[in-house]
Image 1 (cartoon, helix red, strand yellow):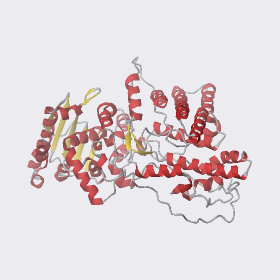
Image 2 (image 1 turned 180 degrees about the vertical axis):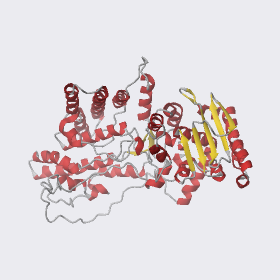
Image 3 (image 1 turned 90 degrees about the horizontal axis):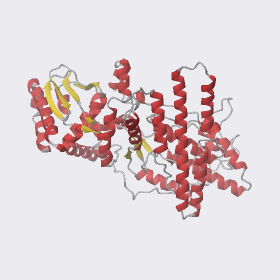
Image 4 (image 1 turned 135 degrees about the horizontal axis):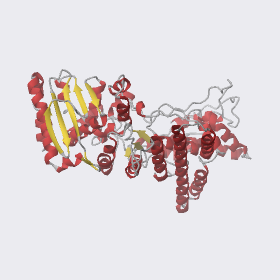
Length: 574
């Protein structure tokens, strides 16, 4: 059946291009075959059904000079085709007949490239475009996968998932520091030349996983949030009154943090994970997530940064999650509220490049010194004080402040769940050393980030738990960690002052190096969801966070300290 579809769609392409009339007939015939398949066969029709009912929409296809124009409409489980391309949910305007015909011959990951190359202009709802691409992929998946495999072979790229690979060590002699920087207090050799990566077996293990594990899409976040919205309403509450957006999102976020799985990675010194996978891909259907919809059946075979995904998760995204956000996403809110402003039109033309910063909190450094100093309870206290003292605050400000409290409470609940999980695992642990580490983690997560930090272990765990929490709220688009050496040095110093012997001090320095190494590897535990176009434009860029080291203090003094060298250690940059 699929071969016959391909014959109808692809026959005599050059002939069709040379005759605009015939090209128009050919496109309508191709759309007609598509409609026939979705009308006749349940294996295709099921994709038109969502948990909320039939997905009804129309997609118009036309050339810039209007020489070809046709529309396919899906309504109540039936598909139909007509001439013309007006009054559609999404309109695809192609440069010419050749580009229009190529839509049926290129893999779904190449469709966005047509926009980037200025060969395709899209007007309307981009989520419907992604869904239309999915329907094309449902019909042509086998051919598309074959094309992707051919692309991969041409590029001669190695495949991920080779568990036999491992890091090879070559023992080297490293230069010792001949003198210490002014504010390096405890590192007798600030170059840390006596240490190499092989001194930290757990970090070697984590690096091997990082280099060999194929990223897997995780749908935990969208599943929990979407279920909450279905139960409690999105535009309106269950009682019919309108939701205040800030409070709705805060209640949903708190529910997410209370109910996401608390995972202590095996052998890790840092508690919590961004996803339920070893290396996960986070989905944000309320922001940019549906952009991947058209590639979801094939992205495991793309030649740059392929993702794995459980078939059950493919179906849940397609049937339950993505359809809920057809109009409940940031782009569509902007289109509706501001009548498709010029800035959005430029963004959707992928002017200069493809990006999703318009749907994310981007390039931000959070006030981690405040988190470490006050803890979330201290921040909640500040918010409540402002609510009490600002008698003239308008309702929107009150709603926003109350939403902040709910979010902080959600993060505290997640940390407490991690504490319980660590304690539970400690009960079953037979290795005394690991048992002690888990019990320590249980105590840490019970305390922070709810309360102020007093040790380096607490500070690193508090920052990481909050880092996870931030990525549960908004699309990963350049959050950064800031001046970690400056912020963590006081906790390092406080710990070192408790060490009574030189042996204790050396042992603690090794522990601090390992803690930072675990923190670095935690930061690699997920990837943002990137349509294939992002691989071409961003060079395979993964989760991007910058750490600023050294420099000067606000007073202009040398800012280099012990933690500067621990963070910049060559063995942690392997």
